[in-house]
Amino acid sequence: MRVCLASTSPARLALLWQSGIEPICVSPDVDEDAVAAAEAERLGRPLAPEEVVLLLGRAKAAEVAGRIHELDPGFAGIVIGGDSMFEIDGAVHGKPHEPARAIARWHAMRGRTGVLHSGHSVILVRPDAPAEEVHAVAEAAVTFAADVDDAEIEAYVATGEPLLVAGAFTVDSLGGAFIERVEGDPSTVVGMSLSTLRRLAGRLGIRWTDLWNAVPGAS
Image (cartoon, rainbow, N blue to C red; front, side, top):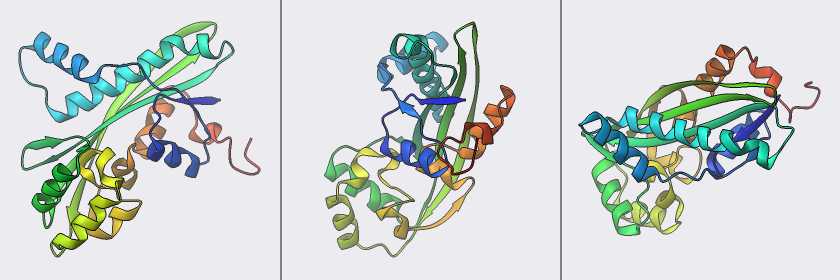
């Protein structure tokens, strides 16, 4: 069973690699802001964080699944799409991009707890059958150390790592030392909940172990 990751996120790719899965990666052609704005207009209200991440995760998976056979005519397997947002004190944070913004976020986050929302979509694609899609949202609460000082924050931001990740932090790399506790599936904070993906694959009749293609001795 082949796997396509509808993302070029190094963190999501590494997470699958560490889990015994070597996917092909395809960058989804999705205007995230436009998709979210259109849905909010359709509903006539702002979208909650869990709605946004699920909407965008599904949009990314669907876009790639819709053209996977143009890229790989014999593809038979699953396409995985995901999106993440970090919420703290009712405010939602995506990627900060700018150092000043990342520093300000860390000043506000230290000693606090926020929630990482992660949307997942898994689409089963076969050349001779209609596609099947299942989806879910996973959440994990993240508590930051209260004694992270300004110099540590500035040094961390200077590495560039927090600029391109939701919430301006990682749990599996340089930022891990500044996080005291994670409640929920830790992989959710990395970018995708592996336990959620396993359940979604099961709903499509796929055993998680059947996706292993980078484990010695696994078939």
